[in-house]
Length: 249
Image 1 (tube, rainbow, N blue to C red):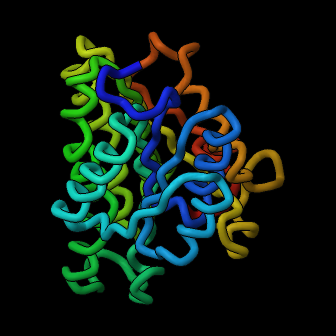
Image 2: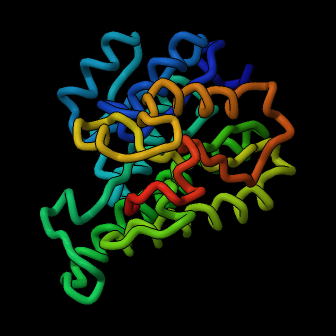
């Protein structure tokens, strides 16, 4: 137990945990006896999840470094420790902004939005918590990548670029902090049923993934059983990256 901690349980910050993969991850953590702090812009839904899991929710705009730092400070002041960070916030800027199109045809503002949310948001929150982990000589950081970062994404250049950047960030940070007892890994899902439209996407299993399946992999990488694993990208995609499915990314 950390010398200044206020709980014997491990504490995890999970970004985007009001819904989807992040919510499933928070729920899995709670079952494992880990306290999952729900970080999300949608504080109403986030609070519902936190109430159900006996934890707390914090409203954070992941594109604001100041808000990320304030959230990390609040968690540390409340629990005296930050053991796990799951950087799950992200999404396709074209869908979010209703601004679909190829790189040459969309305004640069869409590209900037996507890079800031998907790449910089991960860097901001990690930077906000990493010193706490270094001081404790312990930590687990899971960054969410995507198959789009592996095979590309037509019409999603900023998304694919961000996820590719997250792979490199994961490897580089893992090298820097391994000696401090901190593991850094990346999990890259393929199509997962986080919204109805995803059900139409193809995999070799003839179905898309379940949020709980991604959460299970994340939970394993945060466990003591994975203590010698760091710096790698784990693709969980039903074989989608193999290609030959007649589908775009």
